[in-house]
Length: 204
Image (cartoon, rainbow, N blue to C red; front, side, top):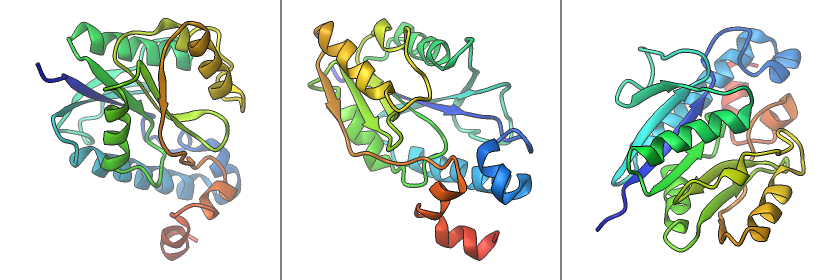
């Protein structure tokens, strides 16, 4: 029986002044807003090339009828990142999905091929991660619910992935890793990313 696969995309609603606040401190709110909208477009393009995979969009505050119109939309539930991700994955497993991968919406180099690699790792592993260069992860996947991934973790710190992997190892879960990617949180991130040329041509 074929696997029932799902991609969850965690999206911060595109509202001027709330998107990419660290970036906005140096390049301005308008420019940071435009950068984030471009990153959302890149993410949306990456979802279009997936094979045999449903897509659920989880917005931070409210559904958006102007974006991601081809996919089922939800609103994130929970007090912190762990609770919000846990809720989204749990809903997916309750709907019968057997391989679920989640990504954010601020990755300039995200492609459908990378998402497919994450899903493929779940054919032979209990979980999968795409390491981020800041010590966290940009992609997470499971083939069944693993609660310890989301419990008592140091969110938004450089030790997040290391601690999570150690926790999984101690609990006997197998883990696959795919290539690292960097997200864009600061001007330095932006200028070191593949978006540098686009930013200079369009916004600088």
